[in-house]
Image 1 (tube, helix red, strand yellow):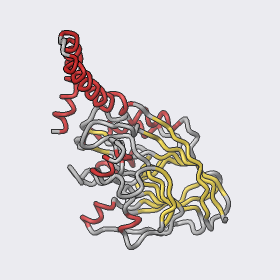
Image 2 (cartoon, rainbow, N blue to C red; image 1 turned 45 degrees about the vertical axis):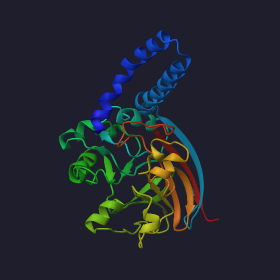
Image 3 (tube, one colour; image 1 turned 30 degrees about the vertical axis):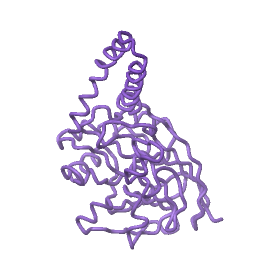
Image 4 (cartoon, rainbow, N blue to C red; image 1 turned 60 degrees about the vertical axis):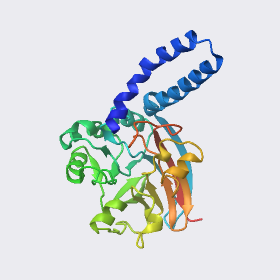
Amino acid sequence: MQLLLYYASYLYFLAVPVILWLMIRKDWRMRKVLLGLFLAFLSVLAYARFVEPRILLVKEHELNICTAAAVGEVRAAVFSDTHNGIFDNAMPVRRIVERVNGLDADLVLIPGDFTYHPPAEDLPDLFAPLADLTAPAFATMGNHDVGLSGEDLTRPLIGTLDALGVTVLDGGAVAAEAGGQPVNIIGLPDHWGAQRDGDWVTPEPPAPGAFTFAIEHNPDVLEERRTLPAFDLMVAGHTHGGQINIPLVTCALTFACDTLRYGYSEERRGNLFVTSGTGMVGLPMRFNVPPVIDMLTISYGPC
């Protein structure tokens, strides 16, 4: 059904001249109005299908976070939910990498959902541009990567990313250097995948006293998991910012507003930043939520 909608969308370009011809030919004013409204509706759908998914924004965010760590600053580029696979209008990884490389980032954080039903043998070609990232990249898995829904691509995807120089922290932690200071990066398992498999783990930060990132695909872990590691900022994705963001309607009909949909928030259990991603699932469209790379400039230290 998803691919049927994807290819059926090309009928828009046949429908436009037909509707315009009918509007010119018909004398009944109300019919012209109705045809005009129908054409406007189709044009909004066409924009969401053909235009907005190819708009790639970079949004700068300056965060001040109180920590026990020494005073420092780190610049982290964040993108997620690329969902490369069956939809050819998903944002190409090459474009994302080119933009990230121009941001002077210390780190690149990718909180999962790389895939959307691609054959496992296509993974090396789909994600080959990640090898060109100039900053160290760290990632974790998302629900679509671990087979919720679709094929479980965890092993081939981790193998592909490792070969491309992306450090996958699916239940692991590493210490790195950023801005001349040590930082910890913890990668948590996908929340839904861990519910299915019963393998939730919370690794400890390897560098005591250093600023600590936690990467988790699903921000719901802040409310739904009893145990979480110590962290200063959790970076998540999953929500797509609603993907098709119609005021009131999106929040009423989807899970996107069950938690923070996009941006930074000081939550009860810790600081959270949610990125709205670059790709699509379900419908091959984005509306009022263009693909985005978030550039976080984080100043931290005792307050």
